Image: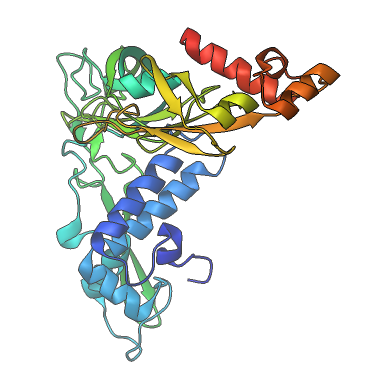
Length: 378
């Protein structure tokens, strides 16, 4: 069909993609475009497009046929002489592409799993490092307690649709120049559910589900990083007709820190040195994630030099131990020196720390300020 995008393009995979790659891409896109999560005007159409592509490419037989013939237009013949009776044969081919009857037909009255949900949770830098427990509130649909999810008033039950006899599908027969074509589509009388509810539940009004605000306790593991996902089984949308609930995926967003930066399990920071400390060597105090430690600076240290504090980084999320902390030293050059200070520097006789530790340069001031906050544990 000319107006359909290539299924591989829809899922963002190559034609040599494995079944696992196809499934992974589908799950990602389905969560992204699900109408319950994405309120954009085109989200529902994109979700259906992704679902259709996955239904074909996830089935080896359908994928093989699609790779050979591409999209099939059910309004066009597939060869053969005029007057031939395709009967159910063409219907089977149609179903193979569009998920109709045959062996792939789903029982509309069978239990249905609930949809997955996604929740974005923002945490502080140190909360991600050390972990935390939090309580979040999730708006979601749950199975109606009054009717137990069947949508009917207590004491009654849904009846089989008189039009489709409970199958949820109608067969439309068309006579074409190529023969008789059988097309299956969702029953218009019951909207494809196969059931008619005459007396609807007063709580859910026949939907079988209700909207609720649910409070959930979440444990953020120590060492979690920005963009990580936490899966909470069964905490998604409620299922239909006794089906299981979907899952809840919590996406972690980590705030930045004024003094510390993070790369994987390692922590990076920048500390200032005055000229004399760098030239003669010194022992300085460094803030880490948990404490203050002493760091020995050797004589002749150059600006931009890195020192490693082993085991002072982030706890490893999957494994034992911790990363390291890397300390970059920046030598602060004093400004507006007096003649006496200049002479002292020429003689290398004094540290002139007061002049150096009160720089006028805005960048150097920001380094000192960030370091002071780190010492305070901010």
